[in-house]
Length: 285
Ligand SMILES: NC(=O)c1ccc[n+]([C@@H]2O[C@H](COP(=O)([O-])OP(=O)(O)OC[C@H]3O[C@@H](n4cnc5c(N)ncnc54)[C@H](OP(=O)(O)O)[C@@H]3O)[C@@H](O)[C@H]2O)c1
Image (cartoon, rainbow, N blue to C red; front, side, top):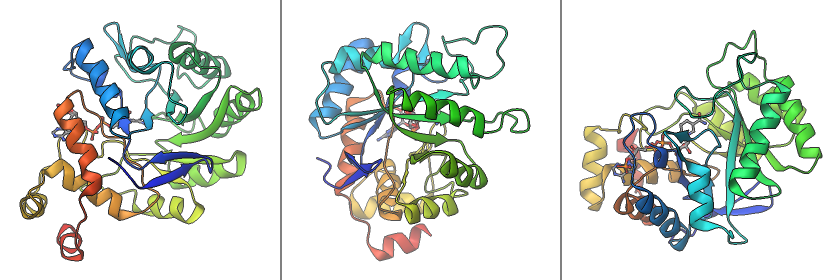
């Protein structure tokens, strides 16, 4: 059971250990759980206290869509369940394709389509949190301000409760904050990839959640002798140490590890109970 909490956007209380739904669609290799296992993973996550699920309408591959699985497994949703979605730069290989005339998904039409697709597929009238995903698009052609202003307008229409940003630089984060209230930042960060350290601290300073993607390494599982040594001392696993390190790193970090395995899900949630000692943390650098 996860006990520590964070108020996402100031009013959505979430357990710090959440769940990322991308793996249910087999990104990017096609390796994914069967439908019944995927539904069981989602239901078990909620049973174990997870109330923050990260997803997107474009997590859809070969006809398997994360939002559709979430809806099937969990609708009608528990009152306290916070589903965070994203729109913007799509991922290559998604079942969701751009119209021929659009290059990025960041046009006003593309963003509205994305928000409406998330509302429809999740079966809700308003999205709790929508991240604007900038991806690795060329920023000289696609600056952050226009799409964020579009999402702000959709929020003012009542379709979105809170906004976040994803795959952003420090400068973009600062700019985003001048345009709209920002509830969270979702960037690449984990115990072995710490380029975003200053962003973690900037978010903490501003009372904004930092939600790292690839918390256990994503497509390249984290392996390091020092992690293994710490894991052995605690009779824990390397992914658990990686997650416990993130929890210890800063109170504004929220975890959304992805898995299609019930065993890994339980292991990841149990990481909340793993307290790393000052010696462990020093060893992990
Ligand atoms: N904003 C963005 O651009 C962006 C990009 C990527 C991801 N995301 C979000 O971030 C979430 C997390 O990222 P992610 O799922 O790609 O990376 P991740 O959570 O670091 O790693 C997931 C991978 O690690 C394995 N894994 C998870 N727990 C494990 C455990 N206890 N032991 C062994 N293996 C384990 C999973 O395989 P098994 O199925 O075998 O457990 C899966 O292949 C995603 O679900 C998605 O919601 C956002």
